Every structure is written in C-alpha cells, then in structure tokens.
Image (cartoon, rainbow, N blue to C red; front, side):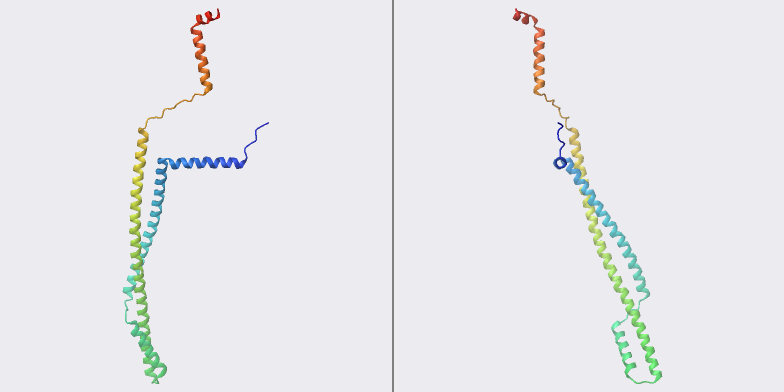
Length: 216
C-alpha cells in the first residue's frame, strides 16, 4: 500500500510553522534587525520629504497670493471710516423717505447718497482685501513653522540613518574577521562498526603467523 498523502491542512500548518521559525530567526539575528531598522528609517525619511515638498509648494503659492493681494490693496487704498459712511447712508435714506423737499433738493440728496454708497462699497472692498491679506500672511507664518519643524525631523532621520549605517558596517567588519567555522563530520554507529571491522581485518592480514598457529 502506498502511504497516504498529507492533508492540505497539515501542509499549511507545516508551512506556517516554517515561516514562523524563519521570522523568529530573523528577529534574533542582530544584522537582520539592523537592516530592518535601517529600512524603516529610510521609509520614514521618504514620508517626511514628501510632506516637506507639499508644504513648500503651498508656501510658494501663498507667497504669490500675498503679493497679489498687497498690490490690490495699494490700488484700492480707499480705507475710510466704514461706520461713519454707513451712518451717513442711513441719514440720507431717512431724509429722502420722510422729508418733503423740492425736486432739486431731492436730486441733490440722491446724488449725495450715490456718492456715499460708492465710497462705502470701495471702503468695504478695501477692508475685505486687507483682511484676506492678513489671513494669508498668517497662513504663511504657520507654514514656515511647519517647514522648520519638518526640516528638523529630516535632519534627525538623516542622523539616525547614518548611525545605523555605521553600526551595520561595524557588524559586517566583525563578521569578516571571524574565523571560518570548522565543519565536524558526524559518524553514525554503523560507520563505527564498519571501521572496527576493517581494522580487525587489517590486523589479521598483517599477522598471518598468529592466525596459523591458532589454527594448529
């Protein structure tokens, strides 16, 4: 009868045990641990560089936006007392709605109202641009702080990588200096029996006289 083939579940269990044993051996190997730690350090540095590049691109965009806003603020430098203009607008609107005036006086009030509304619109736009410019400048300040922090993290990652490289290099040098291991051949009991039998046969061939005298 042919031996039964192992069940798939047993094969999978054996493979899992072999993989677990290999992983355990790698964890115990200092060289493998150093390589793994170095690989993780490189991965972390790559992620930091990616974040840093994104922040630098955003900072460049914000600086361009800030320059454009400052030019608009200069062109629309109509900063006036918005509260005063709003109050003047309300007074004129009230007079036009409640007071009886001649046609010429009413036209004059309407012209004055139009001027106040135009000044108020310009003042509000100027104020909006100023507020937006301040917010953009604040974003630039925060981005610069984040970039400085990431620069420090990248420098720390570089130092860690150099340290691990040195440790790994020293480990490799020590391995090269170690003498080659002596391979010991194992001898089974069957081999020992064969050797003894051969020695006994050799001794008999070397002393034939003793063999003959014993026979006589």
